[in-house]
Amino acid sequence: MSKHRIEALTDGIFAVAMTLLVMELKLPDAQAPGGLASGLVQLIPKFVSWIISFFVLGIFWFNQQRLFHHVKHVDGKLVWLSILCLSLVSLMPFSSSITGQFTLMLFSQIFYSANMAMLAGVALVTNRYAFRHADLMGTPVTQGFYRGVRFRMVGLIVIAFAAVGVARVVPGAGNMAFLLMIPISILSRRLERRS
Image (cartoon, rainbow, N blue to C red):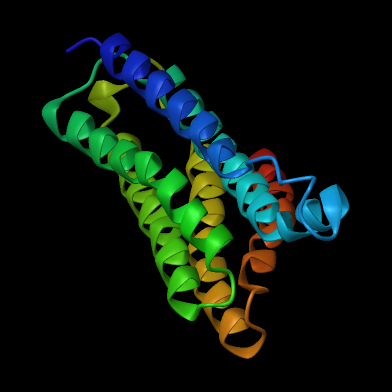
């Protein structure tokens, strides 16, 4: 099968999911007690959830683009792995809205972190499958590329569990753990270059 149909579907779903994330940021009522400033302060948890989700989805989209740069054609298993990944991408706006709306509830952090961890797990399996099936590749996926992806995805899974731990201790602060994706992304690029 040609890879172009799955690339088009991927771009479309990422674009829609990343756009839907912002839907939870509704203008506050400026006439309410406390006015506009108070309303904007109340939006901070939703804003944090939006920005983390947006940039993590950006990392996943970039990873998918880099992987499919190497892919020449796809087989049924790679298609279904990609579709499973996209199903979890499409769930992100809902997960993000839950954690933004119910910031102090532990279950909202568990749900959001589970979505992140499953997305990272499927991305890891997809990259491993592509790495091990050179017959699908136009140009081989390098060991360095695969190590970098593995480091990012395992790192995100660990962060997802850490976020739940943080939320148990400090309700509402769990999403801050996802800021660790910044150094993990930087370290993974160095790992790729070194390999």
